[in-house]
Length: 75
Image (tube, rainbow, N blue to C red; front, side, top):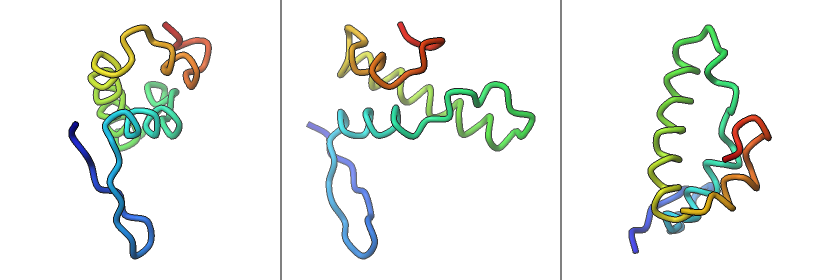
């Protein structure tokens, strides 16, 4: 299983792809597409693209996605 590093203060911990997927769902700006700020839009677009890739691999039935997504974006 692929692992990622996350820095918390002075500590580094490893997190799994599935944990990364859940964290992205928790912090994602679901309304980024409405932003006039290109930086906000680009960040939101990149996050959504990563979330979609991780969803296909770790959440094929969209249960986790639907737990965090606003109703408008549930699948």
